[in-house]
Length: 325
Image 1 (cartoon, helix red, strand yellow):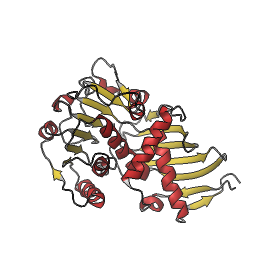
Image 2 (cartoon, one colour):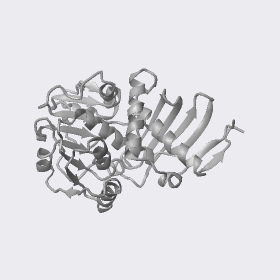
Image 3 (cartoon, one colour):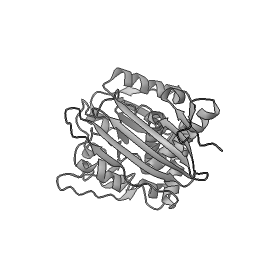
Image 4 (cartoon, helix red, strand yellow):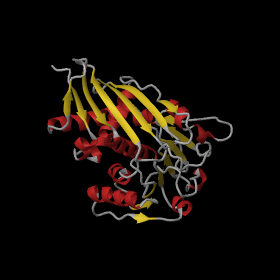
């Protein structure tokens, strides 16, 4: 045994192959292990920094994945809450069976995989029966893989639409869809409210975007609105729904309080791990307008990070550093 830590950079991980189907399975098992009581996931610690001109935010997460028996620490820092250029996130993994460190790695690729997997799992359980249309709003790193992951979970989706304002993000969203589903067409939209009214599933992963803030009332009866911790959703969107879901109610209380409306009350009908485990429904009624709040849980970061790190190490990537000698 060795106490060397594998250091894996963004470049080391960039071309490590993992399919949407594999990631969805890993994330689902992460939720199931948590629902079984095998994992631990305290609420995210978030620290808004005092210099408002820089609009910086930092947070950390600690968790334990009972399926892998690995402990994970994740840290994130962003200077400018909408800046992709100054966003730095890492995850470190420790093997609880040996008591040894395993990896310290860039976490951007992890988040870009487990986030759309969570969206796909939510849609699989909460979308209306026969859902055929989806609108993706936002083309940042958290949203570009969403459509191929949704198609993996819901192959019956026929109409795929996208709203975005950044040419590079639109191009990368197209490329992600083309990689996994080369025969599918992507339609760009300009009128967000009209497109929402025509969609069975709406995913909002936009920041302070150039579109009207999305309102739950714009959904058609039976529609599903998934907010990926998005600033593009109107305050009070949670309160306006017929049925509400969160990945974690505690985390919603940290990162999603503005969604409650003027009275500040956050009422959640079901948490996603319980839905995946079959202990709660994804919706009560076919006509329910369902609102789902997705905030990252480290119990889903750990299995995806472990899979990427294991494959990267096997491919001879990264460096080994003995920090404790």
